[in-house]
Amino acid sequence: MAIEQILATHKKESLADKAYRLIEELIVNLDLAPGMALTEGDLCERTGIGRTPVREAIKRLSTEGLIVIRPRKGLFVSEIETSEYVLVLETRKPLEQLLVASAVKRATAEEREALHQCAEEILAQARAGDVKGYLRADKVFDEVLCAVSRNPFTARAVAPLQTMSRRAWSAFRGAEKLEDSAIRHHKLAEALANNDAEKAEAAAVEMMDHLTNFAVKQAEKAGDNV
Image (cartoon, rainbow, N blue to C red; front, side, top):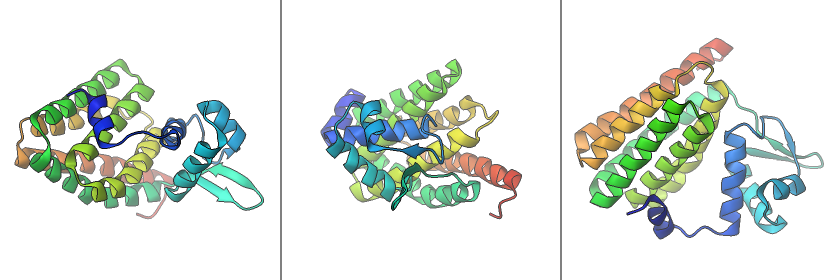
């Protein structure tokens, strides 16, 4: 089953969803930098989508903490704090473990293979040194994992945390090698493809611990108390 088909089967994308996805990607890639002032008109122009769907996307992004709405001042991209990055990952870890356990129980063989394809793409983008391509592939992996877990409650809870941690990693990564994280995604996908619950659980923990260790180091460098 194609990756696009899996995602389409589980959720039909509305114009508001598309606006959200495009603006989210601009924020995660830092094309819209932390603290940057925004306008609805600018976001409409960047996405090629009308004001009503963009306005809905802004509300959702505000709820998820990526956009700040300041009365009488306007819209701003939220700032990123290293200490918050650590807390995001602390919250995300058990949810990722639950997603993986659910995927082991519920994903079909075709869906597990699709996850493996996603991980191959992450690894390819990492080895090519394409940061934006890597982040895009990482998001697709997360979306497919959420879809095949067939637990919409966990998926809704973890999705904003995945986005926030992706943006923070993008902002703080410095000399961090793309391949270090990509290899851990690949280990997880291989375990899921083989329907190996024990290895999948261990790989999920390893992936989250790797991200958390990185975040803690960034917080310590910044002098933040974590």
